[in-house]
Image (cartoon, rainbow, N blue to C red):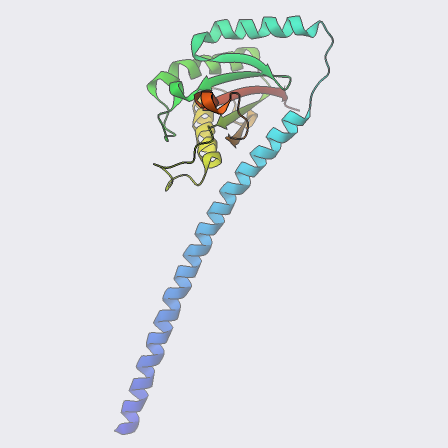
Length: 213
């Protein structure tokens, strides 16, 4: 009788240990899958950043007469987009800047209603004037740390990448070819204004790149 009880006791202990090991193993698998998803997202963002660095590293030397053509092109695109966007040349590329007061509420990645009209016009310009070109959608923030939504976004760079993705998805829905679009999360690291005018740094820029080979 004592032997049987001993066997039953050790069997129960073994079963308990096995159940505990199974639960821990399942937890480890879940942690592994979550880490894989996180690393995949980081890799995608890093690829976008590499594309952006390569884009900025290339500066074409143009003849003096190109300045007039550039100015004319900027004026034409600006007229088509109106006051809600700012068209300029940055690093030798045409850039369409849209302030986040038009596109996003504070700490949000959901496009505001006011963004739809200007982004629809941007999509029309890209399709009519720049077919077959690489399009870089850059997200930018100010240097203030994230407070209210820090549980959702790891950093300003993360937030800027999500906002760039929201704009890219809208452009794709309006007919801009998805393979031509590259997303870049710049965070606070490419400001256009001093800290006292930090609101100007919270923006999305749609940059026209080289022809797709």
